[in-house]
Image 1 (cartoon, rainbow, N blue to C red):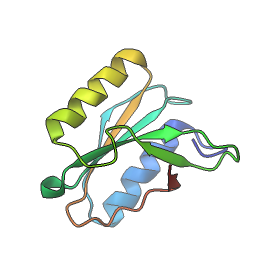
Image 2: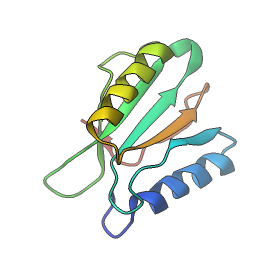
Image 3: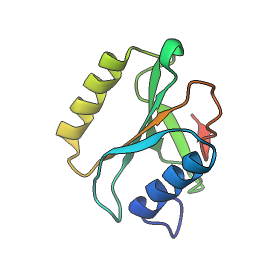
Amino acid sequence: MVMGLTTGLWVSAQVRICDRAFIPATVVRRGDPDAGTVLLKLNRFEDGVTVYTQASTMTDTPAWSRGTGPKPVSEAEADAYIARQVKVDPDVWVLEIEDRRGQYQMDGKIV
């Protein structure tokens, strides 16, 4: 995560940010509290679902990649992707954000 923050603290902060903006956010799965990877499931309902995965950068700045591909997918496809990732990495966190209006701003760039 961001330098100096544990994964658990970062996830809690994202939930709080969403709460203040009246955007539903749920920790669907807790992983390693200190260094677990995060899958961010961004549900835009009619516009589909995108699962973002943490990406590494040369400058240690936050970055995300679209794990489910360039276009949004159905919720079932997103959940299947998450299930596969959990099998590979049991320490992964899953944060689901239900953002029908597209207000949530990710911290970091999408690569």
